[in-house]
Image 1 (cartoon, rainbow over the protein chains, first blue to last red):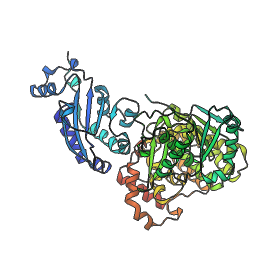
Image 2: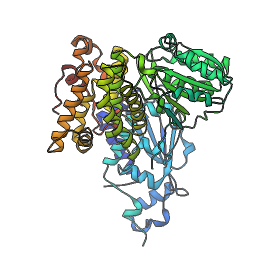
Image 3: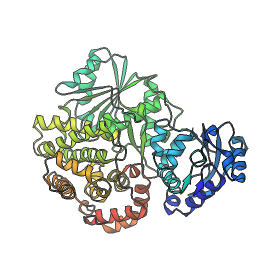
Image 4: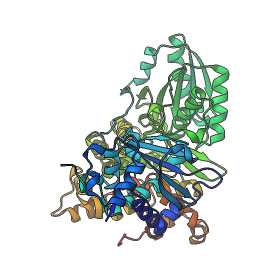
Length: 165
Length: 388
Protein backbone atom coordinates (compact mmCIF):
# COMPACT_ATOMS: atom_id res chain seq x y z
CA UNK A 1 0.00 0.00 0.00
CA UNK A 2 1.22 3.51 -0.78
CA UNK A 3 0.04 6.77 0.70
CA UNK A 4 -1.71 9.17 -1.65
CA UNK A 5 -0.15 12.62 -2.16
CA UNK A 6 3.36 11.31 -1.47
CA UNK A 7 6.38 10.94 -3.75
CA UNK A 8 6.14 7.18 -3.17
CA UNK A 9 2.64 7.15 -4.68
CA UNK A 10 3.80 9.09 -7.72
CA UNK A 11 6.80 6.77 -8.11
CA UNK A 12 4.42 3.81 -8.16
CA UNK A 13 2.15 5.59 -10.64
CA UNK A 14 5.04 6.33 -12.96
CA UNK A 15 6.27 2.74 -12.74
CA UNK A 16 2.83 1.34 -13.55
CA UNK A 17 2.26 3.76 -16.44
CA UNK A 18 5.57 2.73 -17.98
CA UNK A 19 4.74 -0.96 -17.56
CA UNK A 20 1.44 -0.60 -19.40
CA UNK A 21 1.48 -1.69 -23.03
CA UNK A 22 -1.97 -0.13 -23.46
CA UNK A 23 -0.79 3.25 -22.21
CA UNK A 24 2.29 3.15 -24.41
CA UNK A 25 0.05 2.52 -27.43
CA UNK A 26 -2.68 5.04 -26.53
CA UNK A 27 -0.22 7.78 -25.54
CA UNK A 28 1.87 7.44 -28.72
CA UNK A 29 2.53 10.92 -30.12
CA UNK A 30 1.42 12.72 -26.95
CA UNK A 31 3.74 15.63 -26.19
CA UNK A 32 5.88 15.09 -29.29
CA UNK A 33 6.78 18.55 -30.57
CA UNK A 34 4.71 20.23 -27.87
CA UNK A 35 4.51 20.30 -24.10
CA UNK A 36 2.44 17.33 -22.89
CA UNK A 37 3.35 17.72 -19.22
CA UNK A 38 0.70 18.03 -16.53
CA UNK A 39 0.20 19.47 -13.12
CA UNK A 40 -2.47 17.65 -11.16
CA UNK A 41 -3.69 20.27 -8.70
CA UNK A 42 -5.33 18.57 -5.74
CA UNK A 43 -7.34 21.16 -3.85
CA UNK A 44 -9.30 21.37 -0.60
CA UNK A 45 -7.24 18.72 1.15
CA UNK A 46 -8.85 18.32 4.59
CA UNK A 47 -5.62 18.95 6.53
CA UNK A 48 -7.61 19.56 9.69
CA UNK A 49 -8.81 15.96 9.56
CA UNK A 50 -5.35 14.44 9.11
CA UNK A 51 -3.33 13.41 12.17
CA UNK A 52 0.17 14.19 10.88
CA UNK A 53 1.53 13.31 14.31
CA UNK A 54 0.39 9.69 13.83
CA UNK A 55 2.36 9.28 10.61
CA UNK A 56 5.95 8.10 10.45
CA UNK A 57 7.90 11.33 10.99
CA UNK A 58 9.55 11.33 7.54
CA UNK A 59 6.16 10.95 5.80
CA UNK A 60 4.61 13.68 7.94
CA UNK A 61 7.54 15.95 7.15
CA UNK A 62 7.26 15.24 3.42
CA UNK A 63 3.51 15.86 3.31
CA UNK A 64 3.67 19.01 5.40
CA UNK A 65 6.30 20.27 2.99
CA UNK A 66 4.05 19.83 -0.03
CA UNK A 67 0.60 20.68 1.26
CA UNK A 68 0.34 24.44 0.82
CA UNK A 69 -2.98 26.08 1.71
CA UNK A 70 -4.69 22.71 1.37
CA UNK A 71 -3.28 22.16 -2.13
CA UNK A 72 -0.81 19.64 -3.50
CA UNK A 73 0.72 20.01 -6.97
CA UNK A 74 1.82 16.81 -8.68
CA UNK A 75 4.07 17.29 -11.68
CA UNK A 76 3.73 14.57 -14.30
CA UNK A 77 5.94 14.60 -17.40
CA UNK A 78 4.39 12.65 -20.26
CA UNK A 79 5.83 12.10 -23.70
CA UNK A 80 5.06 9.65 -26.49
CA UNK A 81 3.38 7.06 -24.29
CA UNK A 82 5.91 7.29 -21.49
CA UNK A 83 5.94 8.94 -18.08
CA UNK A 84 9.34 10.63 -17.82
CA UNK A 85 8.95 12.01 -14.34
CA UNK A 86 6.37 12.23 -11.54
CA UNK A 87 6.95 14.19 -8.36
CA UNK A 88 5.23 16.60 -6.01
CA UNK A 89 6.29 20.23 -6.39
CA UNK A 90 5.90 23.12 -3.97
CA UNK A 91 5.26 25.86 -6.48
CA UNK A 92 3.44 25.35 -9.81
CA UNK A 93 5.53 28.15 -11.31
CA UNK A 94 8.75 26.19 -10.91
CA UNK A 95 7.88 24.09 -14.00
CA UNK A 96 6.41 24.74 -17.44
CA UNK A 97 3.55 22.47 -18.36
CA UNK A 98 1.04 22.18 -21.20
CA UNK A 99 -1.87 21.23 -18.97
CA UNK A 100 -3.19 21.82 -15.48
CA UNK A 101 -5.99 19.65 -14.14
CA UNK A 102 -7.58 21.01 -10.98
CA UNK A 103 -10.17 19.58 -8.66
CA UNK A 104 -11.05 18.97 -5.02
CA UNK A 105 -9.36 16.21 -3.07
CA UNK A 106 -12.64 14.28 -2.74
CA UNK A 107 -12.97 14.06 -6.54
CA UNK A 108 -9.34 13.00 -6.94
CA UNK A 109 -10.00 10.31 -4.37
CA UNK A 110 -12.98 9.05 -6.34
CA UNK A 111 -10.93 9.10 -9.55
CA UNK A 112 -8.11 7.20 -7.85
CA UNK A 113 -10.58 4.62 -6.58
CA UNK A 114 -12.00 4.13 -10.08
CA UNK A 115 -15.33 5.60 -9.02
CA UNK A 116 -15.23 8.49 -11.50
CA UNK A 117 -15.04 8.31 -15.26
CA UNK A 118 -12.27 10.82 -16.11
CA UNK A 119 -13.92 12.21 -19.26
CA UNK A 120 -17.34 12.44 -17.65
CA UNK A 121 -15.77 14.16 -14.64
CA UNK A 122 -14.31 16.83 -16.95
CA UNK A 123 -17.58 17.23 -18.83
CA UNK A 124 -19.55 17.74 -15.65
CA UNK A 125 -17.09 20.19 -14.11
CA UNK A 126 -15.78 17.92 -11.36
CA UNK A 127 -12.34 18.82 -12.66
CA UNK A 128 -11.20 21.90 -14.51
CA UNK A 129 -8.63 21.63 -17.24
CA UNK A 130 -6.34 24.29 -18.64
CA UNK A 131 -4.49 23.64 -21.88
CA UNK A 132 -5.29 22.48 -25.38
CA UNK A 133 -8.65 20.77 -24.82
CA UNK A 134 -8.86 19.34 -28.32
CA UNK A 135 -5.57 17.47 -27.78
CA UNK A 136 -6.89 16.02 -24.54
CA UNK A 137 -10.10 14.85 -26.24
CA UNK A 138 -8.11 13.25 -29.03
CA UNK A 139 -6.14 11.28 -26.45
CA UNK A 140 -9.12 10.43 -24.28
CA UNK A 141 -8.28 6.72 -24.42
CA UNK A 142 -4.88 7.49 -22.90
CA UNK A 143 -6.58 9.58 -20.20
CA UNK A 144 -8.90 6.70 -19.39
CA UNK A 145 -6.02 4.25 -19.18
CA UNK A 146 -4.15 6.65 -16.88
CA UNK A 147 -7.18 6.75 -14.57
CA UNK A 148 -7.50 2.97 -14.62
CA UNK A 149 -3.84 2.58 -13.75
CA UNK A 150 -4.24 4.99 -10.83
CA UNK A 151 -7.20 2.92 -9.67
CA UNK A 152 -5.02 -0.21 -9.70
CA UNK A 153 -2.52 1.25 -7.26
CA UNK A 154 -3.13 -0.06 -3.77
CA UNK A 155 -3.69 3.35 -2.23
CA UNK A 156 -4.19 4.59 1.30
CA UNK A 157 -5.59 8.09 1.77
CA UNK A 158 -4.05 10.27 4.53
CA UNK A 159 -7.41 11.40 5.97
CA UNK A 160 -8.58 7.78 6.24
CA UNK A 161 -5.31 6.16 7.27
CA UNK A 162 -4.42 8.85 9.81
CA UNK A 163 -7.73 10.43 10.86
CA UNK A 164 -7.67 13.08 13.53
CA UNK A 165 -9.62 11.94 16.57
CA UNK B 1 -24.59 14.04 -12.08
CA UNK B 2 -25.12 14.03 -15.80
CA UNK B 3 -26.37 16.62 -18.26
CA UNK B 4 -29.08 15.67 -20.73
CA UNK B 5 -28.99 17.73 -23.90
CA UNK B 6 -31.28 17.71 -26.91
CA UNK B 7 -32.90 20.22 -29.27
CA UNK B 8 -35.06 22.80 -27.62
CA UNK B 9 -37.82 22.29 -30.18
CA UNK B 10 -38.62 19.15 -32.18
CA UNK B 11 -41.35 19.54 -34.77
CA UNK B 12 -42.55 16.17 -36.09
CA UNK B 13 -45.22 14.86 -38.40
CA UNK B 14 -47.09 15.80 -41.52
CA UNK B 15 -46.40 19.35 -42.76
CA UNK B 16 -43.74 19.87 -40.10
CA UNK B 17 -41.84 22.08 -42.54
CA UNK B 18 -44.54 24.71 -42.13
CA UNK B 19 -43.04 25.45 -38.73
CA UNK B 20 -40.39 27.43 -40.63
CA UNK B 21 -42.99 30.17 -40.94
CA UNK B 22 -42.73 30.63 -37.18
CA UNK B 23 -39.02 31.42 -37.30
CA UNK B 24 -37.99 35.01 -36.73
CA UNK B 25 -34.90 36.43 -38.39
CA UNK B 26 -33.47 38.08 -41.47
CA UNK B 27 -30.97 35.90 -43.27
CA UNK B 28 -30.92 32.14 -43.49
CA UNK B 29 -28.09 30.04 -44.90
CA UNK B 30 -29.09 26.58 -46.07
CA UNK B 31 -26.18 24.13 -45.86
CA UNK B 32 -26.77 21.16 -48.11
CA UNK B 33 -25.43 19.11 -51.03
CA UNK B 34 -26.07 19.03 -54.74
CA UNK B 35 -28.28 15.92 -54.59
CA UNK B 36 -30.69 17.57 -52.16
CA UNK B 37 -30.69 20.67 -54.31
CA UNK B 38 -31.81 18.63 -57.32
CA UNK B 39 -34.68 17.17 -55.30
CA UNK B 40 -36.13 20.66 -54.89
CA UNK B 41 -36.16 20.45 -51.11
CA UNK B 42 -34.05 23.61 -50.95
CA UNK B 43 -36.69 25.56 -52.83
CA UNK B 44 -39.41 24.19 -50.57
CA UNK B 45 -37.56 25.19 -47.39
CA UNK B 46 -36.62 28.57 -48.86
CA UNK B 47 -40.21 29.27 -49.85
CA UNK B 48 -41.43 28.98 -46.25
CA UNK B 49 -38.65 31.24 -45.03
CA UNK B 50 -39.13 33.80 -47.78
CA UNK B 51 -42.83 33.89 -46.95
CA UNK B 52 -41.97 35.41 -43.59
CA UNK B 53 -39.44 37.90 -44.98
CA UNK B 54 -36.15 35.97 -44.88
CA UNK B 55 -33.37 36.38 -47.39
CA UNK B 56 -32.08 32.92 -48.22
CA UNK B 57 -28.66 31.79 -49.47
CA UNK B 58 -27.49 28.28 -50.18
CA UNK B 59 -24.13 26.60 -49.63
CA UNK B 60 -24.48 23.30 -51.48
CA UNK B 61 -20.89 22.11 -51.57
CA UNK B 62 -21.12 19.52 -48.80
CA UNK B 63 -19.67 16.20 -49.92
CA UNK B 64 -20.34 12.81 -48.33
CA UNK B 65 -18.15 12.57 -45.19
CA UNK B 66 -17.48 16.35 -45.19
CA UNK B 67 -13.87 17.45 -44.98
CA UNK B 68 -12.26 20.14 -42.83
CA UNK B 69 -11.60 22.10 -46.05
CA UNK B 70 -15.34 22.18 -46.84
CA UNK B 71 -16.08 23.50 -43.37
CA UNK B 72 -13.54 26.30 -43.75
CA UNK B 73 -14.99 27.15 -47.16
CA UNK B 74 -18.54 27.12 -45.79
CA UNK B 75 -17.58 29.35 -42.88
CA UNK B 76 -15.97 31.83 -45.28
CA UNK B 77 -19.15 31.79 -47.36
CA UNK B 78 -21.18 32.42 -44.20
CA UNK B 79 -18.96 35.31 -43.10
CA UNK B 80 -19.59 37.05 -46.42
CA UNK B 81 -23.33 36.56 -46.07
CA UNK B 82 -23.75 37.07 -42.32
CA UNK B 83 -26.75 34.79 -41.60
CA UNK B 84 -28.70 34.73 -38.34
CA UNK B 85 -29.96 31.19 -38.97
CA UNK B 86 -28.17 28.14 -40.33
CA UNK B 87 -30.33 25.40 -41.83
CA UNK B 88 -28.70 21.98 -42.08
CA UNK B 89 -30.76 20.27 -44.77
CA UNK B 90 -30.00 16.73 -45.89
CA UNK B 91 -28.43 13.61 -44.44
CA UNK B 92 -25.86 13.39 -41.68
CA UNK B 93 -23.11 14.95 -43.78
CA UNK B 94 -25.11 18.12 -44.48
CA UNK B 95 -26.23 18.53 -40.87
CA UNK B 96 -22.76 17.77 -39.50
CA UNK B 97 -21.31 20.30 -41.93
CA UNK B 98 -23.91 22.90 -40.93
CA UNK B 99 -22.99 22.48 -37.26
CA UNK B 100 -19.26 22.79 -37.86
CA UNK B 101 -19.64 25.72 -40.30
CA UNK B 102 -21.83 27.48 -37.75
CA UNK B 103 -19.20 26.99 -35.02
CA UNK B 104 -16.35 28.31 -37.18
CA UNK B 105 -18.55 31.20 -38.36
CA UNK B 106 -19.19 32.18 -34.75
CA UNK B 107 -15.66 31.43 -33.63
CA UNK B 108 -13.28 32.26 -36.50
CA UNK B 109 -10.39 31.93 -34.04
CA UNK B 110 -11.13 28.22 -33.66
CA UNK B 111 -9.72 25.53 -35.95
CA UNK B 112 -12.27 22.92 -37.01
CA UNK B 113 -10.51 20.14 -35.15
CA UNK B 114 -10.38 22.25 -31.99
CA UNK B 115 -14.13 21.92 -31.38
CA UNK B 116 -14.34 20.20 -28.01
CA UNK B 117 -16.78 19.68 -25.16
CA UNK B 118 -14.56 21.01 -22.39
CA UNK B 119 -14.71 24.73 -23.06
CA UNK B 120 -17.58 27.12 -23.57
CA UNK B 121 -17.63 28.20 -27.20
CA UNK B 122 -20.17 30.98 -26.68
CA UNK B 123 -22.29 30.13 -29.70
CA UNK B 124 -25.60 31.83 -30.63
CA UNK B 125 -24.18 35.33 -30.52
CA UNK B 126 -24.55 35.63 -34.31
CA UNK B 127 -26.82 32.79 -35.40
CA UNK B 128 -28.82 29.74 -34.47
CA UNK B 129 -29.30 26.32 -36.03
CA UNK B 130 -32.21 24.39 -37.54
CA UNK B 131 -31.69 20.80 -38.66
CA UNK B 132 -33.95 19.20 -41.23
CA UNK B 133 -33.02 15.58 -41.95
CA UNK B 134 -33.96 14.10 -45.30
CA UNK B 135 -32.76 10.62 -44.36
CA UNK B 136 -33.80 8.51 -41.38
CA UNK B 137 -30.76 7.31 -39.52
CA UNK B 138 -28.00 9.73 -38.70
CA UNK B 139 -29.59 11.37 -35.65
CA UNK B 140 -27.31 14.36 -36.26
CA UNK B 141 -30.35 16.63 -35.98
CA UNK B 142 -30.55 15.70 -32.29
CA UNK B 143 -26.93 15.29 -31.26
CA UNK B 144 -24.18 17.59 -30.04
CA UNK B 145 -21.63 15.86 -32.25
CA UNK B 146 -20.27 16.36 -35.73
CA UNK B 147 -18.10 13.95 -37.68
CA UNK B 148 -15.65 15.72 -39.98
CA UNK B 149 -13.02 14.03 -42.11
CA UNK B 150 -9.36 14.95 -42.01
CA UNK B 151 -8.60 13.99 -45.61
CA UNK B 152 -4.82 14.21 -45.27
CA UNK B 153 -4.78 11.79 -42.35
CA UNK B 154 -7.75 9.74 -43.69
CA UNK B 155 -9.25 10.11 -40.25
CA UNK B 156 -12.74 10.88 -39.00
CA UNK B 157 -12.78 13.46 -36.24
CA UNK B 158 -15.52 12.86 -33.68
CA UNK B 159 -16.05 16.43 -32.48
CA UNK B 160 -18.48 17.27 -29.71
CA UNK B 161 -19.76 20.34 -27.91
CA UNK B 162 -23.09 20.64 -26.09
CA UNK B 163 -23.74 24.08 -27.53
CA UNK B 164 -23.71 22.57 -31.02
CA UNK B 165 -27.10 20.89 -30.60
CA UNK B 166 -29.76 22.31 -32.93
CA UNK B 167 -32.22 24.90 -31.66
CA UNK B 168 -34.93 23.38 -33.83
CA UNK B 169 -35.23 19.97 -35.45
CA UNK B 170 -37.87 19.48 -38.09
CA UNK B 171 -38.96 15.92 -38.90
CA UNK B 172 -41.19 16.05 -41.94
CA UNK B 173 -42.01 12.52 -43.15
CA UNK B 174 -42.36 13.79 -46.71
CA UNK B 175 -38.62 14.38 -47.00
CA UNK B 176 -37.28 10.83 -46.62
CA UNK B 177 -39.75 9.65 -49.29
CA UNK B 178 -37.15 10.01 -52.02
CA UNK B 179 -34.58 7.76 -50.33
CA UNK B 180 -33.64 4.76 -52.47
CA UNK B 181 -33.96 1.37 -50.68
CA UNK B 182 -30.20 1.02 -50.17
CA UNK B 183 -30.12 4.36 -48.35
CA UNK B 184 -33.17 3.39 -46.28
CA UNK B 185 -31.28 0.27 -45.22
CA UNK B 186 -27.92 1.95 -44.54
CA UNK B 187 -29.44 4.76 -42.51
CA UNK B 188 -31.94 2.52 -40.71
CA UNK B 189 -29.20 0.15 -39.57
CA UNK B 190 -27.18 3.19 -38.49
CA UNK B 191 -30.09 4.26 -36.27
CA UNK B 192 -30.36 0.75 -34.83
CA UNK B 193 -26.65 0.78 -34.02
CA UNK B 194 -27.03 4.17 -32.31
CA UNK B 195 -29.92 2.92 -30.21
CA UNK B 196 -28.43 -0.43 -29.19
CA UNK B 197 -24.99 1.01 -28.43
CA UNK B 198 -26.59 3.96 -26.64
CA UNK B 199 -28.59 1.56 -24.45
CA UNK B 200 -25.55 -0.42 -23.29
CA UNK B 201 -22.99 2.41 -23.18
CA UNK B 202 -21.10 3.06 -19.96
CA UNK B 203 -22.70 6.52 -19.85
CA UNK B 204 -26.27 5.27 -20.27
CA UNK B 205 -28.91 6.89 -18.12
CA UNK B 206 -32.67 6.81 -17.58
CA UNK B 207 -33.31 9.35 -20.33
CA UNK B 208 -31.14 7.71 -22.98
CA UNK B 209 -32.68 4.34 -22.07
CA UNK B 210 -36.19 5.60 -22.76
CA UNK B 211 -35.37 7.00 -26.19
CA UNK B 212 -33.18 4.03 -27.14
CA UNK B 213 -35.77 1.36 -26.38
CA UNK B 214 -38.57 3.05 -28.27
CA UNK B 215 -36.25 3.63 -31.24
CA UNK B 216 -35.20 -0.04 -31.26
CA UNK B 217 -38.83 -1.17 -31.19
CA UNK B 218 -39.72 1.12 -34.09
CA UNK B 219 -36.72 0.09 -36.19
CA UNK B 220 -37.34 -3.64 -35.85
CA UNK B 221 -40.99 -3.10 -36.75
CA UNK B 222 -40.81 -0.46 -39.45
CA UNK B 223 -37.42 -0.70 -41.20
CA UNK B 224 -38.33 -3.75 -43.33
CA UNK B 225 -41.60 -2.07 -44.34
CA UNK B 226 -39.92 1.25 -45.19
CA UNK B 227 -37.27 -0.64 -47.16
CA UNK B 228 -39.73 -2.68 -49.21
CA UNK B 229 -42.48 -0.13 -49.58
CA UNK B 230 -41.29 3.50 -49.73
CA UNK B 231 -44.89 4.66 -50.10
CA UNK B 232 -45.87 3.38 -46.67
CA UNK B 233 -46.36 6.69 -44.88
CA UNK B 234 -46.57 5.21 -41.38
CA UNK B 235 -43.33 3.24 -41.71
CA UNK B 236 -41.52 6.24 -43.16
CA UNK B 237 -42.70 8.54 -40.40
CA UNK B 238 -41.90 6.07 -37.60
CA UNK B 239 -38.41 5.47 -39.02
CA UNK B 240 -37.84 9.22 -39.28
CA UNK B 241 -38.84 9.67 -35.65
CA UNK B 242 -36.89 6.58 -34.55
CA UNK B 243 -33.70 7.97 -36.06
CA UNK B 244 -34.01 11.16 -34.03
CA UNK B 245 -34.94 9.25 -30.87
CA UNK B 246 -31.85 7.08 -31.35
CA UNK B 247 -29.85 10.28 -31.86
CA UNK B 248 -31.10 11.67 -28.56
CA UNK B 249 -30.29 8.35 -26.89
CA UNK B 250 -26.71 7.98 -28.05
CA UNK B 251 -25.93 11.66 -27.86
CA UNK B 252 -26.65 11.53 -24.15
CA UNK B 253 -24.97 8.20 -23.49
CA UNK B 254 -22.46 7.71 -26.35
CA UNK B 255 -21.85 4.82 -28.71
CA UNK B 256 -19.42 1.92 -28.55
CA UNK B 257 -17.07 -0.30 -30.52
CA UNK B 258 -19.31 -0.81 -33.56
CA UNK B 259 -18.90 2.93 -34.11
CA UNK B 260 -15.21 2.96 -33.23
CA UNK B 261 -14.56 0.19 -35.75
CA UNK B 262 -17.02 1.62 -38.28
CA UNK B 263 -15.47 5.08 -38.22
CA UNK B 264 -11.98 3.65 -38.73
CA UNK B 265 -13.18 1.27 -41.43
CA UNK B 266 -15.38 3.83 -43.22
CA UNK B 267 -12.66 6.46 -43.38
CA UNK B 268 -10.15 4.06 -44.94
CA UNK B 269 -12.40 2.06 -47.26
CA UNK B 270 -14.96 4.80 -48.05
CA UNK B 271 -17.94 2.72 -47.03
CA UNK B 272 -21.14 4.70 -46.18
CA UNK B 273 -21.36 5.39 -42.46
CA UNK B 274 -24.48 3.34 -41.70
CA UNK B 275 -23.22 0.25 -43.50
CA UNK B 276 -19.78 0.63 -41.93
CA UNK B 277 -21.05 0.72 -38.35
CA UNK B 278 -23.93 -1.71 -38.93
CA UNK B 279 -21.70 -4.53 -40.12
CA UNK B 280 -19.91 -4.51 -36.75
CA UNK B 281 -23.07 -4.41 -34.60
CA UNK B 282 -23.64 -8.18 -34.17
CA UNK B 283 -19.95 -8.67 -33.30
CA UNK B 284 -20.04 -5.83 -30.80
CA UNK B 285 -23.03 -7.43 -29.06
CA UNK B 286 -21.36 -10.84 -28.93
CA UNK B 287 -18.16 -9.30 -27.61
CA UNK B 288 -19.75 -6.93 -25.10
CA UNK B 289 -22.33 -9.29 -23.61
CA UNK B 290 -19.84 -10.45 -20.97
CA UNK B 291 -20.22 -7.03 -19.34
CA UNK B 292 -23.78 -6.15 -20.36
CA UNK B 293 -25.76 -9.38 -20.59
CA UNK B 294 -28.75 -8.00 -18.71
CA UNK B 295 -28.89 -4.85 -20.84
CA UNK B 296 -28.90 -6.78 -24.11
CA UNK B 297 -31.44 -9.21 -22.67
CA UNK B 298 -33.65 -6.21 -21.82
CA UNK B 299 -33.49 -5.12 -25.46
CA UNK B 300 -34.37 -8.63 -26.62
CA UNK B 301 -37.43 -8.73 -24.37
CA UNK B 302 -38.53 -5.25 -25.46
CA UNK B 303 -38.76 -6.52 -29.03
CA UNK B 304 -40.76 -9.57 -27.90
CA UNK B 305 -38.00 -12.15 -28.08
CA UNK B 306 -38.93 -15.02 -25.80
CA UNK B 307 -36.15 -16.79 -23.94
CA UNK B 308 -35.66 -18.83 -20.79
CA UNK B 309 -32.39 -17.16 -19.84
CA UNK B 310 -30.55 -13.91 -20.49
CA UNK B 311 -27.91 -15.82 -22.46
CA UNK B 312 -30.55 -17.27 -24.74
CA UNK B 313 -32.22 -13.85 -25.13
CA UNK B 314 -28.95 -12.24 -26.23
CA UNK B 315 -28.17 -15.06 -28.65
CA UNK B 316 -31.59 -14.52 -30.20
CA UNK B 317 -31.03 -10.75 -30.27
CA UNK B 318 -27.85 -11.23 -32.32
CA UNK B 319 -29.82 -13.46 -34.69
CA UNK B 320 -32.58 -10.87 -34.92
CA UNK B 321 -30.08 -8.11 -35.76
CA UNK B 322 -28.47 -10.28 -38.44
CA UNK B 323 -31.84 -11.28 -39.81
CA UNK B 324 -32.98 -7.64 -40.01
CA UNK B 325 -29.74 -6.66 -41.73
CA UNK B 326 -30.13 -9.49 -44.19
CA UNK B 327 -33.76 -8.57 -44.86
CA UNK B 328 -32.74 -5.05 -45.87
CA UNK B 329 -29.78 -6.18 -47.92
CA UNK B 330 -27.00 -5.14 -45.55
CA UNK B 331 -23.71 -7.09 -45.41
CA UNK B 332 -22.96 -9.30 -42.41
CA UNK B 333 -19.21 -9.37 -42.79
CA UNK B 334 -16.39 -7.25 -44.23
CA UNK B 335 -15.77 -9.98 -46.81
CA UNK B 336 -19.36 -9.62 -48.05
CA UNK B 337 -18.59 -5.99 -48.89
CA UNK B 338 -16.19 -7.21 -51.55
CA UNK B 339 -13.07 -6.19 -49.65
CA UNK B 340 -10.24 -8.63 -50.10
CA UNK B 341 -8.06 -10.05 -47.36
CA UNK B 342 -5.06 -8.31 -48.96
CA UNK B 343 -6.81 -4.93 -48.81
CA UNK B 344 -7.57 -5.42 -45.13
CA UNK B 345 -4.05 -6.67 -44.34
CA UNK B 346 -2.55 -3.60 -45.99
CA UNK B 347 -4.49 -1.25 -43.72
CA UNK B 348 -4.81 -3.53 -40.71
CA UNK B 349 -2.47 -1.77 -38.26
CA UNK B 350 -3.99 1.61 -39.07
CA UNK B 351 -7.53 0.26 -38.66
CA UNK B 352 -6.71 -1.27 -35.29
CA UNK B 353 -4.93 1.78 -33.88
CA UNK B 354 -7.71 4.12 -34.92
CA UNK B 355 -10.48 1.91 -33.56
CA UNK B 356 -8.63 1.25 -30.30
CA UNK B 357 -8.00 4.96 -29.75
CA UNK B 358 -11.49 6.12 -30.69
CA UNK B 359 -13.38 7.87 -27.92
CA UNK B 360 -16.27 5.46 -28.63
CA UNK B 361 -14.18 2.45 -27.60
CA UNK B 362 -13.96 3.21 -23.92
CA UNK B 363 -17.68 3.99 -23.68
CA UNK B 364 -18.33 0.38 -24.65
CA UNK B 365 -19.53 -1.82 -21.79
CA UNK B 366 -16.50 -4.08 -22.37
CA UNK B 367 -13.46 -2.06 -23.34
CA UNK B 368 -11.24 -4.00 -25.75
CA UNK B 369 -7.48 -3.75 -25.70
CA UNK B 370 -5.51 -3.61 -28.94
CA UNK B 371 -5.31 -7.42 -29.21
CA UNK B 372 -9.07 -7.75 -28.89
CA UNK B 373 -9.65 -5.04 -31.51
CA UNK B 374 -7.44 -7.03 -33.91
CA UNK B 375 -9.47 -10.15 -33.25
CA UNK B 376 -12.75 -8.27 -33.66
CA UNK B 377 -11.71 -7.07 -37.13
CA UNK B 378 -10.58 -10.55 -38.11
CA UNK B 379 -13.79 -12.19 -36.91
CA UNK B 380 -15.91 -9.48 -38.59
CA UNK B 381 -13.98 -10.04 -41.81
CA UNK B 382 -14.82 -13.74 -41.88
CA UNK B 383 -18.27 -13.43 -40.30
CA UNK B 384 -17.30 -15.65 -37.36
CA UNK B 385 -19.15 -15.76 -34.05
CA UNK B 386 -17.17 -14.02 -31.30
CA UNK B 387 -15.84 -16.63 -28.86
CA UNK B 388 -13.38 -14.65 -26.75
